[in-house]
Image (cartoon, rainbow, N blue to C red; front, side, top):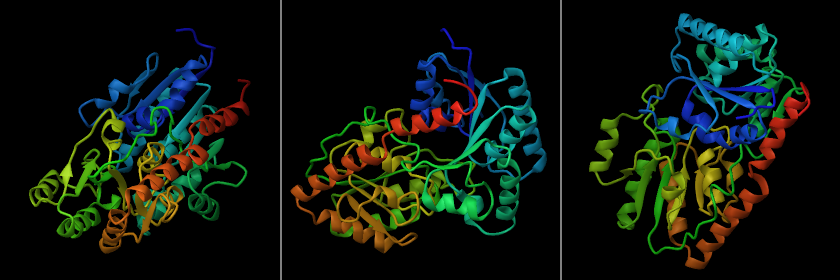
Length: 378
């Protein structure tokens, strides 16, 4: 493959997130002649992400204790990134999630390599105000001062990083459509069906609203026993708020939910007729599953929080619910089930229009290209 002499590294804490969520951006840079390298830990799910690495893209595995708090492990991770960056000498680096943002940005700065960090969500560390939050905030401030730019995915996160002096207004960029969604990979699909499935598409974590989803399922299925409640997404056993396989099995055996596992082809499952995508999350940057749902014309039900509410036009393409409130979630499901077929079709069309107007990933590529143009000609 012929390169244009430019090299980019994308660094994250999960390989799957890089190839699944940023695959379009990565492929676009490959098509433009860039040499692209992915840096992340090896897959914890048996290697599914390997299948999605674009042709011509190199992958360099690195050890990372994603949710651990041992400082020696973090120092080792920083040193590993420094060695990789020193050897590869990329022209630009993009970092994602807390530890790559901190330790990757510091490694890049030491080597004089420009970088951009993406704060995709404030997450568990910032959700719980305490020592962990204070340490994370201090490290973020220290590291991100050395980033060329910082991407954030919603208005509230933008305000937070400015107010907390994690980043300055001059270099913080709010991506109003989040990380975007490919409207061709996720085409509009007819949602007409006499059967309804409420589907939670997310990592199986407590703070994605797992328990509220299960409880709402019990409430709804008492009145509508034919309605299905399904969960699609990985079990992230390294996350401190993960749901155990035993707990999922217990809820399946009770008849409340069905667990579908993971897939390399999300549209084939999430795009099934009659699907309503549900995300009762506690915190989000900008929900990927909701953006994908909008593109495919799926009605959506989500928590009334930053990163979710941007995807919902109340009563037009879905409903917003009270976070951590199963009855509120159940009532939204009841509201959808009471709609006529014509009203449900209007919800589907409104979702697709919102995806086209706000969340088209082409807008995101422009933002990536713009920050790099400050360092060299493209």
